[in-house]
Amino acid sequence: MKDKPRASGILSLFRLLVCGLAGLLPAFAADTEYRLVRIEPAGQSVRVRLPLTDVTGKVRPKQRTPDGYGEPLAPTKTALGATHYLEWQIGYDTREADAPNVVKEIQFTRRGEPKFGAELSKLLVDALRLGIISTNDLLRERDRLAKLAEATLEEREGITTERTPLDPRGGALPDGFTRWTQKVPQFLRETEHGWIQIQLKPRQRGVGNQAMVYVCLPMAQALTADGKPRAPGPARTKETVFYDFNRANAGFLLDIVRAFALASKQHNEDMGQILGKILATAPARKP
Image 1 (cartoon, rainbow, N blue to C red):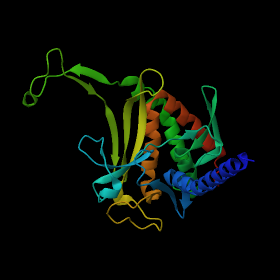
Image 2 (tube, rainbow, N blue to C red):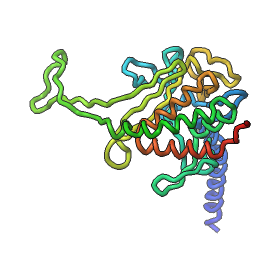
Image 3 (tube, one colour):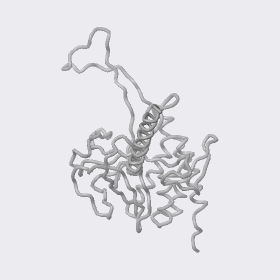
Image 4 (spheres, one colour):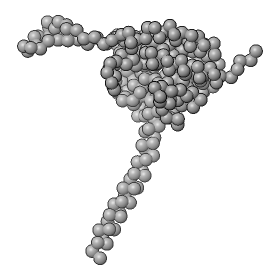
């Protein structure tokens, strides 16, 4: 009989834990949803929803700097305006068939692993359906792939390290220490609608460097949910903003395709498969 109070206490504690977890799940789901990039048609545009305060995710607000790399910032404490931008590490595929922004019609294989088109692939598919870009545009990009494959940056460029003199104003180093500087090349394509960065970074798995593509979207062109320009000012907690791809900036969208094709041979090959799938499934043009 002495065990009954203990059992009752354990049961009560279990119920409290279950109730607590049940209360946390909606908040966790909302936080996960906020962090996602969402791509959907909106009238005659393809609209991209981007998180504004997720400073550790694929989309990060930055202050533009002369070196092009940008300076990370605290968006809720910074009056975001003309000198700021969102750096989006855009992708074009996923292993998950039910992932956000997936295009199940685009399936291809990379090194024996099945892939589905996503993000950039969805942008292209939606833009084609809306008439923002044409099949001729995609054919031209596909025709460029072979030439770009001859000069891909991941295979041609590298990160170098060299011994460099000390700044005399900083004083001498202790005996036995010398100064070395690492030089990391970066490649930019700038337009009035935004710019694209290709950066070389050490591989997270394996040896060597990998080329990463970032789409940089000026805060001056960020929109609110109703399609109006976002007013300058600090970000609200979990604020999202929007960017529209339409006929006015269709060339910028195609620049992203070109950036991946130039970044590495693997990206170039993937672009060929994705463009081929899109063209194969595109509606036939009327005579």
